[in-house]
Image (cartoon, rainbow, N blue to C red; front, side, top):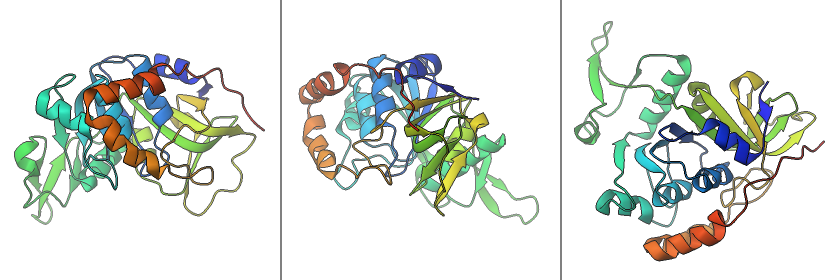
Length: 279
């Protein structure tokens, strides 16, 4: 059964310097609170994995937590570039950032392969694109049955996956609802998994048709973190803060304004107190 921990203790226990860390969530349920705690604990030399790195990875990169990014698209959704990511790639600030770029389909297949314990992921893709020129991990093989030319890539197996979800019950089962991305596969592929949730309840209540239940045995630690996905949204709890995504473009464009905002809004915010479960 997973332990119910404070956010501070969960990150201290499971995220270490040099780890490969996946923080997943597609448009919503993005684990911002957990990412901020990683920054506060000054983790370094992380390999960050995310299908669509956006603001939380911009912040982690800008604060010097990352040395490598494995991804398939990066940007401020609906707004533009991630300026801290670009600064790291183009100017090595605050340190150089290595990139391993895939397609969305490639990332999804790689997580699924990692979750299944397979040595590689195979897919129809990448042929005719420039990605194999910049990513030496993309290879091509022939189907031994049909002779079809297929792409092959390594599986994704994070040291730790961090996601945000709506609810967990007291035995450690977790419910995600709404737009579901690759959270399930990312959790199953990882050695350790931290799940922050809006609430811990007596039961998960009736799931909606578009939902995923992660059984307790897949999770290492659960953290009660209401609002833990803001400024992204949590279906059934709060809306996306669209204004902040627009504001982030100006905040992050220059190094000093970025550092000032991070000092005032992340570093000076105390780590989470011990969780209080709700019935």
